[in-house]
Length: 109
Image (cartoon, rainbow, N blue to C red; front, side, top):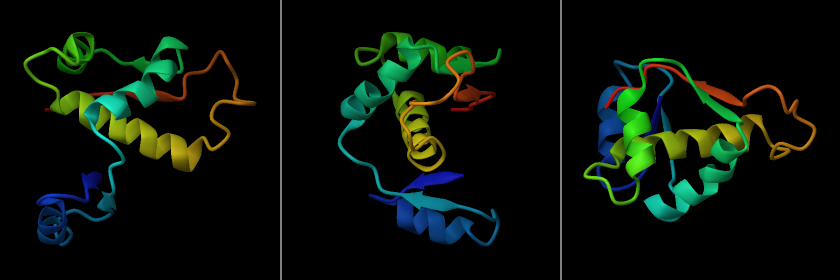
C-alpha cells in the first residue's frame, strides 16, 4: 500500500504502520495533471488494462481534469508511476507488446 509522503501522509503512515504491514511512503513528483500526462502514453499504448468493477476509476479517468472528482485518478497515476519506476525500468523497451504492464482490479475510492 502506497501513501503519499506529503501533507498529512507521514502522520497517517505512522499511525497505520502497526496495523497494516508493508506501507510505503512515496514522494509525489509534480502535480496531478503532470502525473496523469506521464501515465497517459501507457494507457494509449494498451500497456494498462482494467478488470471489471473499476467503473468509478474509469469514469474519473474519462472526465479528468474537468470532472468533479480526481482522487482516484491521482492514486492510480501515482501507483502506476511507482510500479513503472521499480518493476518496469526499461520504460517498455523489450517488454512484450501483447501483454499489459498492469491490471487494475477493485480500486476503491
